[in-house]
Image 1 (cartoon, one colour):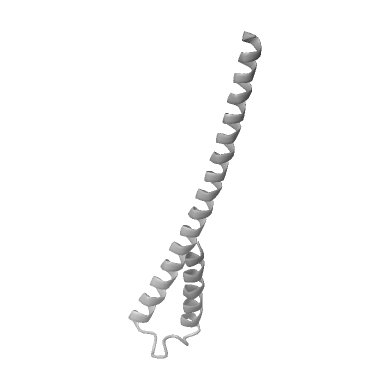
Image 2 (cartoon, rainbow, N blue to C red; image 1 turned 45 degrees about the vertical axis):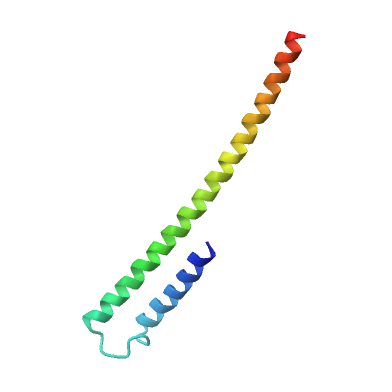
Amino acid sequence: MLWWILILIVLVILSFLSQLDVLFTMQMSPQAYLVTAIINILILACIVGVVFRILKRTRRKEKETLILKVKELEEKLKAKKEENSS
């Protein structure tokens, strides 16, 4: 996750510099526009990747809490059955 954020920061800085025409000192040629578009697409991809990782981790935590809750309820059910059978 840290790598995603570091790459995102680098891409945002490159995008900012390209919009200020500092990155490409030559005349804005079609190639420069293409590079800028690719940088923006990579920024979008990194943001999507970070969001999916965050959602995946939250879902995993929710699953873990649900599994613990199910185990706890199963133990209570076993205890009730033992009480009733005694």
